[in-house]
Amino acid sequence: MRKLRTHLSLAMTLVALVTVALISLLSNVFVGSRFESYVREQHEVKTEHILNDLTMQYNGLARTWNTAAIHEAGMYALREGYIVKLYDGYTGEIIWDAENHDMTECEHIMKEISERMARRGSTGEFTSVEYPLTRNNRLIGTAQVKYFGPFFLSESDFNFLNALNMILLSAAVASLLVSFVVGWLLARRIARPIARTAEIAKQISAGNYALRFSGITKTMELDNLITTVNHLSDSLSKQEGLRKQLTADVAHELRTPIAALGSNLETMIEGVWEPTPERLQSCYEEITRLGKLVADLESLERVEGGNLALAKTPADLMELVRIVCDNFAGDFANKDLKLRVEGEQSKITIDKDRISGVISNLISNTVKYTPEGGQIRVCVRDSKHESILTVEDNGVGIPEDELPFIFERLYRADKSRNRNTGGAGIGLAIVKSVITAHGGKVEVQSKPGKGSRFVVTIPKDGDWEVLRC
Image (cartoon, rainbow, N blue to C red):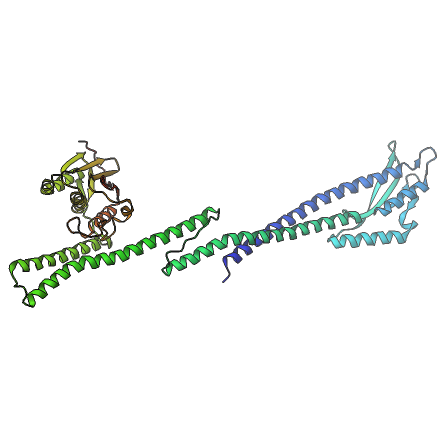
């Protein structure tokens, strides 16, 4: 199994190789095609130049040819790869023939050109073409030109193409080497943070939540991955702390009633105390406390365990608020608390019993943590898509560092866990689970000494006519 760095390096090198090879191939084909067109044009120009030179060597008055000049022009053409034979236009006699003049040289040039074109892969051959020579619209001769067709390359042309191919090959090799180095460096830059993040994730899975990835890669996806892993480590660390706190809280909640119950029973069994109705009543109250704690835990388990079946029916959230508040009338009177209920009707489809429990839990908390003579405000707001319930007080408030944890099971800001100021710390956990089951959310804002505000938002199901107070 290859490493990510190796995979990336090979992939980038392969892409570069294919790209360079494709560019080189297309460049070679394009340049070759254009150069072939250029050579054909040059062939026509050279042929026309040879014919013009021959035509100029004719003396029209004497009807004679300058054979010395024709010989010079013919030898020049031979060195260019053109074998010329000149016929007189009147007599038909051969004026000059390159093959008769120097057969050895002609064969040498023909062989050299054939071999040169064979190396290039050409399958042409030497062909002869006759061209009429005229002056003043009169035929003065015929030139027979033999050359390698359909075209041929001179030695300089052949060297130019070889040099071009070498340049393309060198550029391809250099590009491949550069792409490999750049690809390796880039793959190393990408693979190192990924490998480091994978190692941190492995350590996190082993329970080491203190590790963090520090630094910035300047790559958005990698930075997002690193941030996510760091957040995961933070969350797991907090969850581990909450798990340990939960264990301690459960032990504390069970230890107090069990210790009191055991102490009372032991004293009565040893005969130190008489089993009077008052002492038996005290034992019964401790047992009741244990039963209530177990019932609360069972209720929380049902809500959080995914087995919560909501019996949704149409309801008016404001009406539920008023009913629950009426149930707390005695508590408000005992502490001289001023209650203000305001807002508007909000028709919504909910599980009325469970939402009533949510409202009851929130109001119960405000009663417990608001001093005598305090104020409690409950407000219902309605919108097209959701109902909003706000419960706020001017009580003791919650420290800022405690706010993220108050919806956790058995969590209480009062570390003494005094029964006079709160329950087992399960109510708010149930509140969050019920609201989440309804597709809503619950938020809290609080300042120590100034009070708390709980905001519950529940999305609507169905089409209701919005009624205003």
